[in-house]
Length: 198
Image (cartoon, rainbow, N blue to C red; front, side):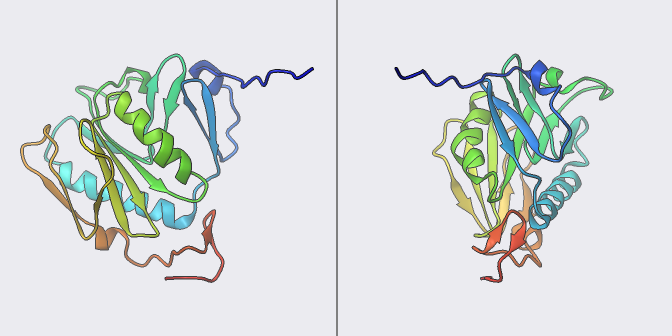
Protein backbone atom coordinates (compact mmCIF):
# COMPACT_ATOMS: atom_id res chain seq x y z
CA UNK A 1 0.00 0.00 0.00
CA UNK A 2 1.43 3.38 -1.05
CA UNK A 3 1.80 6.09 1.56
CA UNK A 4 0.95 9.71 0.84
CA UNK A 5 3.90 12.06 0.66
CA UNK A 6 3.72 14.69 3.38
CA UNK A 7 5.52 17.97 2.80
CA UNK A 8 6.19 19.80 6.05
CA UNK A 9 4.79 23.31 6.40
CA UNK A 10 6.40 25.94 8.61
CA UNK A 11 5.47 29.28 10.09
CA UNK A 12 7.47 32.46 10.59
CA UNK A 13 7.66 31.57 14.29
CA UNK A 14 9.21 28.18 13.35
CA UNK A 15 11.77 29.94 11.15
CA UNK A 16 12.99 32.05 14.06
CA UNK A 17 14.18 28.84 15.76
CA UNK A 18 16.27 27.64 12.80
CA UNK A 19 20.08 27.57 13.25
CA UNK A 20 22.32 30.43 12.18
CA UNK A 21 24.53 28.20 10.03
CA UNK A 22 25.33 30.41 7.02
CA UNK A 23 22.45 29.18 4.89
CA UNK A 24 19.46 31.32 4.01
CA UNK A 25 16.15 29.98 5.29
CA UNK A 26 13.01 31.49 3.79
CA UNK A 27 9.32 30.61 3.73
CA UNK A 28 6.91 30.83 0.84
CA UNK A 29 3.38 29.98 1.94
CA UNK A 30 4.79 27.59 4.54
CA UNK A 31 7.25 25.86 2.20
CA UNK A 32 10.87 26.03 3.31
CA UNK A 33 13.40 27.44 0.82
CA UNK A 34 17.04 26.81 1.71
CA UNK A 35 19.92 28.29 -0.26
CA UNK A 36 23.66 28.19 0.46
CA UNK A 37 25.62 31.27 1.45
CA UNK A 38 26.34 33.40 -1.63
CA UNK A 39 29.62 33.69 -3.52
CA UNK A 40 31.92 36.71 -3.76
CA UNK A 41 30.53 37.99 -7.08
CA UNK A 42 26.97 37.80 -5.78
CA UNK A 43 27.82 39.79 -2.66
CA UNK A 44 29.92 42.33 -4.54
CA UNK A 45 27.10 43.12 -6.97
CA UNK A 46 24.49 43.24 -4.20
CA UNK A 47 26.67 45.65 -2.19
CA UNK A 48 27.32 47.87 -5.21
CA UNK A 49 23.62 48.02 -6.02
CA UNK A 50 22.72 48.86 -2.43
CA UNK A 51 25.39 51.57 -2.36
CA UNK A 52 24.28 53.07 -5.68
CA UNK A 53 20.63 53.09 -4.61
CA UNK A 54 21.53 54.63 -1.25
CA UNK A 55 23.44 57.43 -2.95
CA UNK A 56 20.65 58.10 -5.43
CA UNK A 57 17.98 58.17 -2.71
CA UNK A 58 19.82 60.09 0.02
CA UNK A 59 17.83 63.26 -0.64
CA UNK A 60 14.54 61.42 -0.04
CA UNK A 61 13.76 61.35 3.71
CA UNK A 62 12.20 58.19 5.03
CA UNK A 63 13.44 56.04 2.13
CA UNK A 64 15.87 53.29 3.17
CA UNK A 65 18.04 50.76 1.36
CA UNK A 66 19.16 47.56 3.09
CA UNK A 67 20.79 44.36 2.02
CA UNK A 68 19.54 41.84 2.70
CA UNK A 69 16.05 42.85 3.75
CA UNK A 70 13.04 40.88 4.92
CA UNK A 71 9.48 40.79 3.58
CA UNK A 72 7.16 39.13 6.10
CA UNK A 73 3.51 38.19 5.81
CA UNK A 74 2.54 36.09 8.78
CA UNK A 75 1.98 33.35 9.44
CA UNK A 76 3.67 31.47 6.56
CA UNK A 77 5.78 33.76 4.36
CA UNK A 78 9.16 35.33 5.03
CA UNK A 79 11.46 36.17 2.12
CA UNK A 80 14.87 37.87 2.13
CA UNK A 81 15.66 39.98 -0.94
CA UNK A 82 19.37 40.63 -1.46
CA UNK A 83 18.61 44.36 -1.60
CA UNK A 84 15.41 46.08 -0.53
CA UNK A 85 14.12 49.65 -0.76
CA UNK A 86 11.38 50.62 1.66
CA UNK A 87 9.71 53.65 3.17
CA UNK A 88 9.32 54.12 6.91
CA UNK A 89 8.59 57.24 8.92
CA UNK A 90 10.19 57.95 12.27
CA UNK A 91 12.74 55.87 14.17
CA UNK A 92 13.51 52.47 12.70
CA UNK A 93 12.74 50.41 15.78
CA UNK A 94 9.94 48.44 14.16
CA UNK A 95 10.41 44.79 13.35
CA UNK A 96 10.42 43.57 9.76
CA UNK A 97 6.89 42.30 10.39
CA UNK A 98 5.63 45.86 10.73
CA UNK A 99 7.05 47.18 7.46
CA UNK A 100 4.39 47.36 4.77
CA UNK A 101 5.71 49.85 2.21
CA UNK A 102 8.41 47.97 0.33
CA UNK A 103 9.07 49.65 -3.03
CA UNK A 104 11.70 47.37 -4.54
CA UNK A 105 13.03 43.85 -4.01
CA UNK A 106 16.28 42.85 -5.72
CA UNK A 107 17.52 39.28 -6.09
CA UNK A 108 21.00 38.58 -7.43
CA UNK A 109 20.77 35.27 -9.26
CA UNK A 110 23.31 32.62 -8.30
CA UNK A 111 23.52 28.89 -9.00
CA UNK A 112 22.10 28.01 -5.58
CA UNK A 113 19.10 30.34 -5.79
CA UNK A 114 18.43 30.93 -9.49
CA UNK A 115 15.33 28.73 -9.80
CA UNK A 116 13.77 29.94 -6.53
CA UNK A 117 14.40 33.60 -7.34
CA UNK A 118 13.16 33.47 -10.93
CA UNK A 119 10.32 30.98 -10.76
CA UNK A 120 8.90 31.53 -7.28
CA UNK A 121 10.16 34.55 -5.35
CA UNK A 122 9.67 37.13 -8.10
CA UNK A 123 5.95 36.38 -8.38
CA UNK A 124 5.62 36.10 -4.61
CA UNK A 125 7.03 39.60 -4.07
CA UNK A 126 4.60 41.04 -6.60
CA UNK A 127 1.69 39.16 -5.00
CA UNK A 128 2.73 40.48 -1.57
CA UNK A 129 2.45 44.06 -2.80
CA UNK A 130 6.05 44.88 -3.74
CA UNK A 131 5.49 46.90 -6.93
CA UNK A 132 8.85 46.19 -8.58
CA UNK A 133 11.31 43.29 -8.57
CA UNK A 134 14.79 43.18 -10.14
CA UNK A 135 16.49 39.89 -10.95
CA UNK A 136 20.19 40.56 -11.44
CA UNK A 137 21.82 38.12 -13.85
CA UNK A 138 25.58 38.00 -13.26
CA UNK A 139 26.25 35.78 -16.27
CA UNK A 140 24.44 38.09 -18.69
CA UNK A 141 25.38 41.30 -16.86
CA UNK A 142 21.77 42.36 -17.10
CA UNK A 143 18.81 43.15 -14.86
CA UNK A 144 15.39 41.61 -15.49
CA UNK A 145 12.69 43.99 -14.27
CA UNK A 146 9.17 42.92 -13.32
CA UNK A 147 6.46 45.37 -12.30
CA UNK A 148 2.94 44.93 -11.03
CA UNK A 149 0.55 44.89 -13.99
CA UNK A 150 3.31 44.76 -16.62
CA UNK A 151 4.83 41.91 -18.65
CA UNK A 152 7.64 40.23 -16.66
CA UNK A 153 11.34 40.38 -17.31
CA UNK A 154 12.06 43.60 -19.15
CA UNK A 155 15.80 43.08 -19.81
CA UNK A 156 18.07 46.06 -19.13
CA UNK A 157 21.81 46.42 -19.76
CA UNK A 158 24.11 49.44 -19.60
CA UNK A 159 21.96 52.13 -17.97
CA UNK A 160 19.10 51.21 -15.65
CA UNK A 161 16.52 53.96 -15.20
CA UNK A 162 14.24 53.45 -12.18
CA UNK A 163 11.12 55.55 -12.69
CA UNK A 164 9.23 54.73 -9.51
CA UNK A 165 5.87 56.49 -9.07
CA UNK A 166 6.92 57.15 -5.46
CA UNK A 167 9.87 59.34 -6.48
CA UNK A 168 9.80 62.91 -7.78
CA UNK A 169 12.27 62.03 -10.54
CA UNK A 170 13.80 58.86 -12.03
CA UNK A 171 17.15 57.63 -10.81
CA UNK A 172 19.78 56.09 -13.04
CA UNK A 173 22.25 53.31 -12.25
CA UNK A 174 25.27 52.49 -14.42
CA UNK A 175 25.19 48.70 -14.66
CA UNK A 176 28.64 48.64 -16.28
CA UNK A 177 30.03 49.94 -12.98
CA UNK A 178 27.90 47.50 -10.98
CA UNK A 179 29.26 44.54 -12.97
CA UNK A 180 32.85 45.84 -13.35
CA UNK A 181 35.74 43.46 -12.58
CA UNK A 182 33.56 40.35 -12.41
CA UNK A 183 35.12 37.21 -13.88
CA UNK A 184 31.92 35.21 -13.90
CA UNK A 185 30.65 32.90 -16.56
CA UNK A 186 28.87 29.65 -17.09
CA UNK A 187 31.56 27.87 -15.10
CA UNK A 188 30.63 29.49 -11.79
CA UNK A 189 29.27 27.01 -9.27
CA UNK A 190 28.27 28.22 -5.81
CA UNK A 191 30.67 31.14 -5.91
CA UNK A 192 33.62 29.10 -7.23
CA UNK A 193 34.79 29.13 -10.82
CA UNK A 194 35.74 26.08 -12.83
CA UNK A 195 38.11 27.91 -15.16
CA UNK A 196 35.65 28.72 -17.93
CA UNK A 197 34.98 32.43 -18.37
CA UNK A 198 33.31 34.61 -20.93
